[in-house]
Length: 229
Image (cartoon, rainbow, N blue to C red):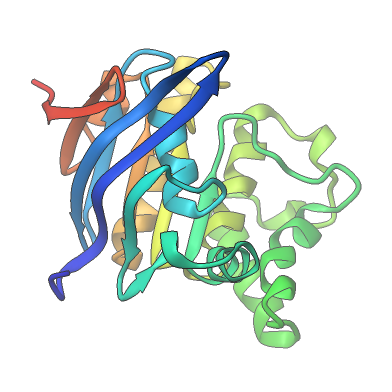
């Protein structure tokens, strides 16, 4: 693995048993993403995009092949080790926000830090700073259900970045928002990750969103194809 690689996939495959036959979701995917690169992944529903993110993050295990994030072979770790690695090194932004409704905005932000034993004055200061950056400085005591969809996604972005992950995975981050709000959110996300020099792999159905990436790849029937035009 090159020193400039933040993510490397080698012959990554995923199959499921369906009756008496195997169903291939991913078929020998190879990918190298350099540190600080923003890569967009497009393709039809069911083409394997979300499965790929689950394998990279260690939520699911590959049928064969390897996932390397920096110097760690994530695919060789046990389930508990993958969970600990994910908490420290990977950030997530999802389509449906996944905020915890019984926690305030500030508590949602602080949760990833608490899970890795990082709490106290510095942690709260980092959370306050991120809330300001996403335009929600006064909303720390609010609960998610009183926020608009765009505001909830801003909180979700701040939560994904607060522990300073080396890799950010985004799965249709604007899919649950209207067009105008989605454009504002993705521009904010792009600005924040560029400032942090973060590596990003983003699944999107939107060609407009994909134009903000350094590279656009297409997933088709479980295979990773050439860059989309």
